[in-house]
Image (cartoon, rainbow over all chains, first blue to last red; front, top):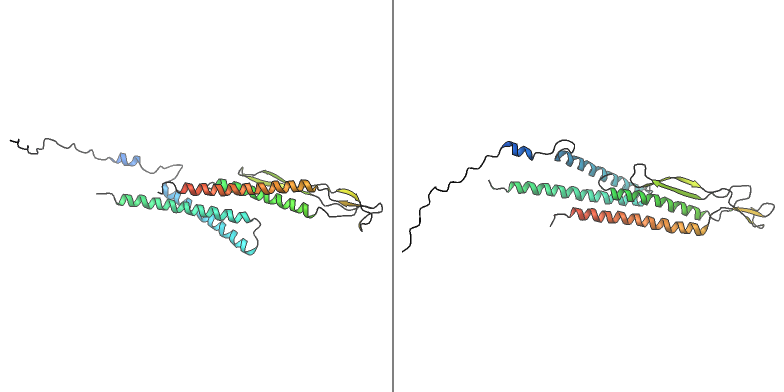
Length: 107
Length: 131
Protein backbone atom coordinates (compact mmCIF):
# COMPACT_ATOMS: atom_id res chain seq x y z
CA UNK A 1 0.00 0.00 0.00
CA UNK A 2 1.41 3.31 -0.98
CA UNK A 3 1.32 6.40 1.15
CA UNK A 4 -0.86 9.20 -0.17
CA UNK A 5 0.98 12.03 -1.73
CA UNK A 6 1.03 14.99 0.56
CA UNK A 7 -0.81 17.95 -0.86
CA UNK A 8 1.29 20.88 -1.84
CA UNK A 9 1.11 23.40 0.86
CA UNK A 10 2.27 26.94 1.09
CA UNK A 11 4.86 25.81 3.59
CA UNK A 12 7.71 26.78 1.30
CA UNK A 13 7.28 30.48 0.85
CA UNK A 14 9.46 32.11 -1.76
CA UNK A 15 11.52 34.83 -0.25
CA UNK A 16 10.55 38.23 -1.47
CA UNK A 17 12.89 39.59 -4.12
CA UNK A 18 14.57 42.72 -3.00
CA UNK A 19 13.57 45.61 -5.22
CA UNK A 20 16.33 46.96 -7.43
CA UNK A 21 17.22 50.35 -6.15
CA UNK A 22 18.15 53.18 -8.44
CA UNK A 23 21.48 53.34 -6.67
CA UNK A 24 22.44 50.01 -8.26
CA UNK A 25 21.58 51.25 -11.72
CA UNK A 26 23.49 54.48 -11.46
CA UNK A 27 26.55 52.41 -10.63
CA UNK A 28 26.59 51.20 -14.24
CA UNK A 29 26.01 54.67 -15.66
CA UNK A 30 28.40 55.89 -18.37
CA UNK A 31 31.74 56.90 -16.99
CA UNK A 32 31.63 60.63 -17.06
CA UNK A 33 34.63 62.90 -16.92
CA UNK A 34 37.86 62.71 -18.87
CA UNK A 35 36.89 59.84 -21.18
CA UNK A 36 33.55 61.22 -22.30
CA UNK A 37 30.54 59.02 -22.99
CA UNK A 38 30.10 56.49 -25.75
CA UNK A 39 28.26 58.85 -28.06
CA UNK A 40 31.09 61.37 -27.93
CA UNK A 41 33.66 58.67 -28.58
CA UNK A 42 31.62 57.40 -31.50
CA UNK A 43 31.36 60.88 -32.98
CA UNK A 44 35.12 61.38 -32.59
CA UNK A 45 35.77 58.03 -34.24
CA UNK A 46 33.55 58.89 -37.18
CA UNK A 47 35.25 62.26 -37.53
CA UNK A 48 38.71 60.68 -37.63
CA UNK A 49 37.46 58.13 -40.17
CA UNK A 50 36.13 61.01 -42.26
CA UNK A 51 39.53 62.74 -42.08
CA UNK A 52 41.35 59.58 -43.18
CA UNK A 53 38.96 59.07 -46.09
CA UNK A 54 39.36 62.69 -47.19
CA UNK A 55 43.15 62.41 -47.06
CA UNK A 56 43.06 59.18 -49.05
CA UNK A 57 40.79 60.75 -51.69
CA UNK A 58 42.99 63.85 -51.97
CA UNK A 59 46.07 61.69 -52.55
CA UNK A 60 44.17 59.60 -55.10
CA UNK A 61 43.39 62.79 -57.04
CA UNK A 62 47.05 63.80 -56.80
CA UNK A 63 48.10 60.39 -58.13
CA UNK A 64 45.74 60.83 -61.08
CA UNK A 65 46.95 64.35 -61.89
CA UNK A 66 50.62 63.48 -61.45
CA UNK A 67 51.17 65.72 -58.42
CA UNK A 68 51.93 62.80 -56.12
CA UNK A 69 55.57 62.93 -54.94
CA UNK A 70 55.51 59.80 -52.78
CA UNK A 71 53.74 56.69 -54.03
CA UNK A 72 53.70 55.19 -50.54
CA UNK A 73 51.89 58.25 -49.17
CA UNK A 74 48.80 57.22 -51.10
CA UNK A 75 49.02 53.49 -50.48
CA UNK A 76 49.57 54.03 -46.75
CA UNK A 77 46.70 56.52 -46.54
CA UNK A 78 44.47 54.07 -48.39
CA UNK A 79 45.45 51.25 -46.02
CA UNK A 80 44.76 53.44 -42.99
CA UNK A 81 41.38 54.50 -44.35
CA UNK A 82 40.51 50.87 -45.08
CA UNK A 83 41.42 49.70 -41.56
CA UNK A 84 39.59 52.63 -39.96
CA UNK A 85 36.48 51.81 -41.99
CA UNK A 86 36.60 48.18 -40.94
CA UNK A 87 37.10 49.23 -37.32
CA UNK A 88 34.08 51.52 -37.48
CA UNK A 89 31.97 48.81 -39.05
CA UNK A 90 33.09 46.36 -36.36
CA UNK A 91 32.12 48.80 -33.59
CA UNK A 92 28.77 49.45 -35.26
CA UNK A 93 28.08 45.72 -35.61
CA UNK A 94 28.92 45.11 -31.97
CA UNK A 95 26.66 47.95 -30.87
CA UNK A 96 23.73 46.66 -32.96
CA UNK A 97 24.40 43.15 -31.65
CA UNK A 98 24.25 44.37 -28.06
CA UNK A 99 21.05 46.29 -28.77
CA UNK A 100 19.40 43.23 -30.31
CA UNK A 101 20.48 41.13 -27.36
CA UNK A 102 18.75 43.53 -25.02
CA UNK A 103 15.61 43.61 -27.19
CA UNK A 104 15.42 39.79 -27.08
CA UNK A 105 15.34 39.86 -23.30
CA UNK A 106 12.21 38.18 -21.85
CA UNK A 107 9.82 40.37 -19.94
CA UNK B 1 47.81 60.17 -35.66
CA UNK B 2 47.19 57.98 -32.67
CA UNK B 3 45.00 55.22 -34.05
CA UNK B 4 47.52 53.64 -36.41
CA UNK B 5 50.81 54.88 -35.04
CA UNK B 6 52.98 52.08 -36.38
CA UNK B 7 51.79 52.70 -39.93
CA UNK B 8 52.36 56.45 -39.74
CA UNK B 9 55.82 56.08 -38.20
CA UNK B 10 56.94 53.53 -40.78
CA UNK B 11 55.52 55.83 -43.47
CA UNK B 12 57.75 58.68 -42.31
CA UNK B 13 60.72 56.31 -42.56
CA UNK B 14 59.76 55.38 -46.10
CA UNK B 15 59.72 59.07 -47.02
CA UNK B 16 63.21 59.60 -45.56
CA UNK B 17 64.65 56.66 -47.49
CA UNK B 18 62.90 57.76 -50.68
CA UNK B 19 64.76 61.06 -50.36
CA UNK B 20 68.04 59.23 -49.73
CA UNK B 21 67.43 57.18 -52.87
CA UNK B 22 66.80 60.44 -54.73
CA UNK B 23 70.06 61.92 -53.43
CA UNK B 24 72.09 58.84 -54.42
CA UNK B 25 70.39 58.84 -57.80
CA UNK B 26 71.32 62.50 -58.30
CA UNK B 27 74.94 61.85 -57.27
CA UNK B 28 75.25 58.92 -59.67
CA UNK B 29 73.64 60.86 -62.51
CA UNK B 30 76.22 63.64 -62.16
CA UNK B 31 79.24 61.52 -61.29
CA UNK B 32 80.93 62.08 -64.65
CA UNK B 33 80.23 65.79 -65.00
CA UNK B 34 83.35 67.56 -66.20
CA UNK B 35 83.97 71.23 -65.54
CA UNK B 36 86.91 73.46 -66.32
CA UNK B 37 89.39 74.08 -63.54
CA UNK B 38 88.21 77.68 -62.99
CA UNK B 39 84.61 76.45 -62.39
CA UNK B 40 83.00 74.51 -59.53
CA UNK B 41 82.65 70.74 -59.64
CA UNK B 42 79.25 69.14 -59.03
CA UNK B 43 78.58 68.99 -55.29
CA UNK B 44 77.54 65.59 -53.97
CA UNK B 45 74.31 65.64 -51.95
CA UNK B 46 74.03 63.95 -48.56
CA UNK B 47 70.70 63.53 -46.74
CA UNK B 48 70.64 64.32 -43.02
CA UNK B 49 68.12 62.02 -41.32
CA UNK B 50 66.88 62.82 -37.83
CA UNK B 51 64.04 62.07 -35.44
CA UNK B 52 60.74 63.67 -36.41
CA UNK B 53 59.83 66.92 -34.65
CA UNK B 54 56.79 65.32 -32.97
CA UNK B 55 58.80 62.28 -31.86
CA UNK B 56 56.93 59.90 -34.15
CA UNK B 57 59.24 58.53 -36.80
CA UNK B 58 61.99 60.15 -38.84
CA UNK B 59 62.36 63.17 -41.05
CA UNK B 60 64.95 64.74 -43.32
CA UNK B 61 66.68 67.54 -41.43
CA UNK B 62 68.42 68.92 -44.46
CA UNK B 63 70.77 68.27 -47.35
CA UNK B 64 74.51 68.72 -46.93
CA UNK B 65 76.55 69.31 -50.07
CA UNK B 66 80.00 67.94 -50.69
CA UNK B 67 83.06 69.88 -51.75
CA UNK B 68 82.95 72.02 -54.88
CA UNK B 69 86.67 71.47 -55.35
CA UNK B 70 86.25 67.97 -56.73
CA UNK B 71 89.35 66.29 -58.04
CA UNK B 72 91.66 67.37 -60.82
CA UNK B 73 92.23 64.89 -63.61
CA UNK B 74 94.86 65.22 -66.31
CA UNK B 75 93.00 65.08 -69.66
CA UNK B 76 94.84 67.33 -72.11
CA UNK B 77 92.64 66.29 -75.05
CA UNK B 78 89.43 67.31 -73.27
CA UNK B 79 87.85 70.45 -74.76
CA UNK B 80 87.44 71.92 -71.25
CA UNK B 81 91.06 71.28 -70.24
CA UNK B 82 93.07 74.26 -68.99
CA UNK B 83 96.54 75.26 -70.11
CA UNK B 84 98.18 72.47 -68.05
CA UNK B 85 95.72 69.91 -69.39
CA UNK B 86 93.60 69.46 -66.23
CA UNK B 87 89.80 69.23 -65.87
CA UNK B 88 87.66 69.07 -62.72
CA UNK B 89 85.59 66.00 -61.80
CA UNK B 90 83.14 65.82 -58.87
CA UNK B 91 84.53 64.16 -55.74
CA UNK B 92 82.05 61.25 -55.65
CA UNK B 93 83.07 57.69 -54.93
CA UNK B 94 81.06 55.28 -57.08
CA UNK B 95 81.58 52.34 -54.69
CA UNK B 96 80.38 54.35 -51.71
CA UNK B 97 77.33 55.54 -53.63
CA UNK B 98 76.46 51.99 -54.66
CA UNK B 99 76.74 50.91 -51.02
CA UNK B 100 74.45 53.73 -49.97
CA UNK B 101 72.05 52.76 -52.74
CA UNK B 102 71.74 49.24 -51.33
CA UNK B 103 71.32 50.54 -47.77
CA UNK B 104 68.63 53.01 -48.80
CA UNK B 105 66.78 50.39 -50.84
CA UNK B 106 66.83 47.79 -48.07
CA UNK B 107 65.74 50.31 -45.44
CA UNK B 108 62.94 51.50 -47.71
CA UNK B 109 61.75 47.92 -48.09
CA UNK B 110 62.09 47.28 -44.35
CA UNK B 111 59.84 50.21 -43.54
CA UNK B 112 57.28 49.07 -46.09
CA UNK B 113 57.34 45.64 -44.47
CA UNK B 114 56.57 47.27 -41.13
CA UNK B 115 53.58 49.00 -42.73
CA UNK B 116 52.35 45.69 -44.09
CA UNK B 117 52.85 43.77 -40.84
CA UNK B 118 51.15 46.52 -38.82
CA UNK B 119 48.22 46.43 -41.22
CA UNK B 120 47.94 42.65 -40.88
CA UNK B 121 48.07 42.95 -37.09
CA UNK B 122 45.36 45.60 -36.94
CA UNK B 123 43.13 43.51 -39.20
CA UNK B 124 43.72 40.49 -36.95
CA UNK B 125 42.68 42.61 -33.96
CA UNK B 126 39.42 43.40 -35.74
CA UNK B 127 38.67 39.68 -35.96
CA UNK B 128 38.60 39.37 -32.15
CA UNK B 129 35.39 37.81 -30.91
CA UNK B 130 33.88 37.53 -34.35
CA UNK B 131 33.50 33.75 -34.46
